[in-house]
Image (cartoon, rainbow, N blue to C red):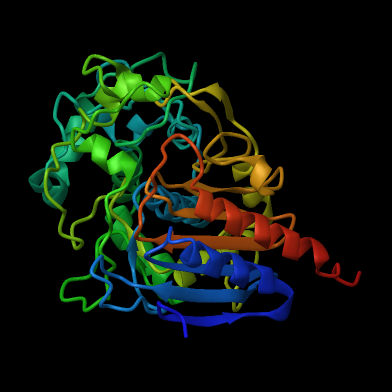
Length: 398
């Protein structure tokens, strides 16, 4: 008898993933979590366990939705890449062609590619920080972005667009389609694929939401002492630093946001089952649906930005909208292949796909992460187990 509920399935070839998932609970590190793995277009691991609430009275379910935090940007990127595929967008055409107001203050030459690769320099909204009202109305956020100034010459360096990324792409999607990125994702990706993943829950939704415990990153956002362990942490404690301005100083969100409100940089919710399915559809067909073609998958997995990030002050590598190996938060040491792409959340959530191995992985949880600046240990163990399993699976017959 386990002291916590658990359910789901893992194929025999992936039994080691099930063991790693259980060990995270046995060690006491997990409260509630789910993991899903797709291989060659079908689910081979779909597990969930523990509790959706800190009181440990509400069991985690197959359809439990977790707050994604930064991996919300993966949903936004997938939506924008789908639009790129459907409309044949020119990623090197200036944003201002479709959003004229954006050209102000030295932004006329910024392109969608610069945003996707974290090179636009538009990383701060401390002149007009995000508020619940601004997020609900959408227009004030777009106006704040148009009034923003790049923090470096666009295209010459890279820095994580922690707060601005989702909003920049959402306004670009809206200018092209009339839909915010949340509505575009719901109509063109979540609907056809049958995903329980949302950038803004539909009105009247009865979704089963996990209650998130505070991670170290969230504690820092709430004013906890950052300490001096990393350059990034020291910078977070300095209100004049780019790190502080781009992250803490760009938001005034003091209370939990209504999940129905679109926050395309941090506020997405999804089940592991749906995240795994979404990422599988980026690298292959899932029930006859592939979101982008192989050439576009190859391009998004090609390194475009490397070196020390100007915002988080850590080494990072970026493709088109996704983290690539190798960095402390997306490490090759976990077994990630050279063309793997995905997203790490400071709250502990982790998602990736590997086109070479026809693999997609999604892990969501609510215990948060006690560390910042590197991959969560629980996710690391799961990813390592997945890759050990995949290496033992026979190659496809030619």
